[in-house]
Image 1 (cartoon, rainbow, N blue to C red):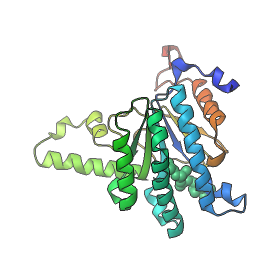
Image 2 (tube, helix red, strand yellow; image 1 turned 45 degrees about the vertical axis):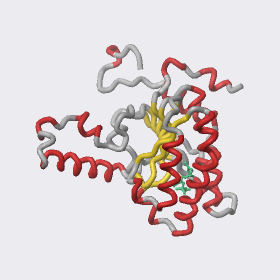
Image 3 (tube, rainbow, N blue to C red; image 1 turned 30 degrees about the horizontal axis):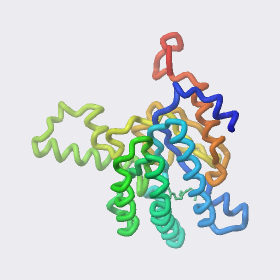
Amino acid sequence: MSLLKDQINLEKLPKHIAIIMDGNGRWAKHRNMPRVFGHKNGVTAVREVSEASAELGIEYLTLYAFSTENWNRPALEVNALMSLLVETVKKELKTLNDNNIRLHAIGNLSKLPKKTYDTLMAGIEDTSQNDRMVLNLALNYSAKEEMLLATQRIAEKVKSGVLSSDAIDYSIIEDHLTTSGMPDPELLIRTSGEQRISNFLLWQIAYSELYFTDTFWPDFKRDDLYQAILDYQSRERRFGKISEQITTI
Ligand code: FPP
């Protein structure tokens, strides 16, 4: 039984947690192992954190698994990451269904290799009826690109007369992002000691609490998640108001 878990206030859980999983390469390097070994162990952390999140009652867990910039890595590593994704989705499908977890993905998905795309879509389809938690993988994702594509789609609608430019408001923009329909993350975690956003969910994290930890992603376990949530719960979320105006987070 985890002592940290017991301290979490289940009434004040974030609905949506987003994680920048960083440090797989360095974790492997410390062990004199190839970077891919780090990614493989990163999958163990994905499993553990997904389980822990679902058990707590988190509704959305978004994991930054592959950015548009990650294509610039050596081909060997890119291919290994794509294979790992296919392998993991296939292997974990039963567990996802047994635990009533719905798989979802955001990013420029149609540009993924066909096998990755097809496996991902099959996983999304096979788990579409599950409603306990959404496990949302950001793949070939770039927040700037997401906003650019949304702007282009909105502009097309204005051009064709489907939408008036006066009608464009925050909700119209949100409807055209790949996170459409999801609440914004209240908590964003980044592992491995880096303190950057790296083009992740720029619109959606406008009011997110940021939590940075030195722990490398493969070492990030249940207690690390609980610690992050406890830290989040200890903060006062003011959304621009003053302390006296806040009653609940
Ligand atoms: C960052 O570590 C990690 C990634 C770019 C990939 C994350 C992928 C996984 C955890 C495995 C696949 C995930 C799923 C959901 C099946 P890094 O390589 O940037 O580490 P470094 O900063 O130490 O080099």
